[in-house]
Amino acid sequence: MVICIRSNVKILSRANKREHWSERHRRSKAQRGEGRSLLMESSFWKSDLAAKELVVTFTRIAPRALDDDNLAFAFKSWRDGVADGLNINDRDPRVTWRYAQERGRPHEYAMTITITPRTEPEA
Image (cartoon, rainbow, N blue to C red; front, top):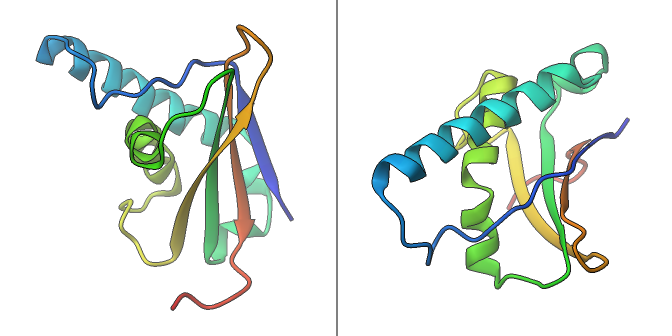
């Protein structure tokens, strides 16, 4: 079984953003809460995935790509929120976190969170 959650949000790189710490904290807290809510509102807990080792893939959809380190950093708060929804720490070895990008149309911004069972053992 595969769970795919889509949200029309703009995922921006936070690494080079110059802003006050309180603004960054406010945005991170909101994204973490939204990540948890997206998981809780999905059909994940009704599926048979809840007791399995998982692969969670965040996909950014935007007209332009980010480099790989900025991509992972842009999803940090979302990852924390999904981990909260799974009732685990985001460094739990039962979950593998992956990041991807897709090119969107001009002015199209979204993200998907795909949750699948892990089929191969981690190295």
